[in-house]
Amino acid sequence: MGTAEYEPIARRHRVPIVVTGFEPLDLLERILACVHQLEQGRAEVENRYGRAMRPAGNGRAQALLSEVFVIETRAWRGLGEIPRSGLGLGPAYRRFDARRRFHPVARRVASAGPCISGEILRGVRKPADCSAFACACTPEHPLGATIVSSEGACAAYHRYRRPVAATPA
Ligand code: SF4
Image (cartoon, rainbow, N blue to C red):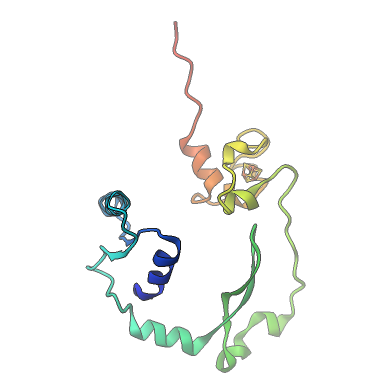
């Protein structure tokens, strides 16, 4: 993608955006770069992942994406339908579109019972706000999407935010 698409976001929402790699040191250093921007009242896009990413992005990958896909409206779990938020196969590849070929019946999988995973995905509530967290809902017996995969917010809270054991007297 490159960095150009992020610049209007940084400007409009007044947020620093720093491109980073995936190693722990990468993440820590780029979080620090965000903190520096906030302290200095800046909201810019910085590419600190120059060893793998050019500001213009990967032109060949971009060309392939626009050859194969078209932008379309998509429904997202917890967020609902968002115009122009997804990719579908473009005219030249439509014959490979399983939805057109097999006409599957769309199933809406609602989150069960007390699950508030939609609000967690939107960032308005935290996993600990859910009455089922770590009791009725665990990674072994999930009630919602955000505890199923390891990168889900509920799964991460379950793994890393255990209650502190009482100190023995
Ligand atoms: S803890 Fe389980 S039930 Fe509660 S919001 Fe997360 S996934 Fe849903």
